[in-house]
Image 1 (cartoon, rainbow, N blue to C red):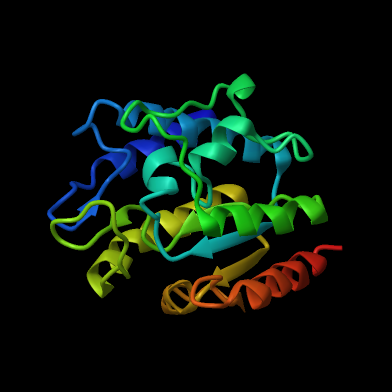
Image 2 (cartoon, rainbow, N blue to C red):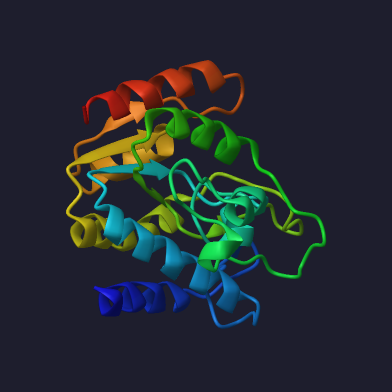
Length: 213
């Protein structure tokens, strides 16, 4: 299985960054090697955990997966770990890059893991577009991925579902739901936590994970 993970990550590296999205796994930037390794460690941990459920977000945020290489995580979560779940942490080999001295947090990642820790069920995590889309001229920003970008992400999403033999897929927000429907994958949907959706997001996560019980 490690060979399949390496092949999956290698395919990610081949997508070239441009003026309004950044591929945090490519060989174009040397520190991306840390993010590739973080993703490898994460997928390796998930293989051992055998998740039945996949949560699909929209795209990496500039304070989250853009820095860590792992969907729905911030540097703070990645390095400190989630000991209740035995996931992440410096002791397990996860690292941050030296791009920023500050240890970044991200609201969506924090809200998501606060909810998941309570359930003790660990879902697999990915994004409809696996790279960081930003406003032209401002890499410290986020934007909704375009239809072309979403198309680029579809094959990675399908491959991940195949690799992990996922039984239940949950879309976080409209973009993820549309993407999954486009490629013929049935899904549940939860509200994205941004713009006042935190409570509905938390309730949606709890309801989705309860279906595993």
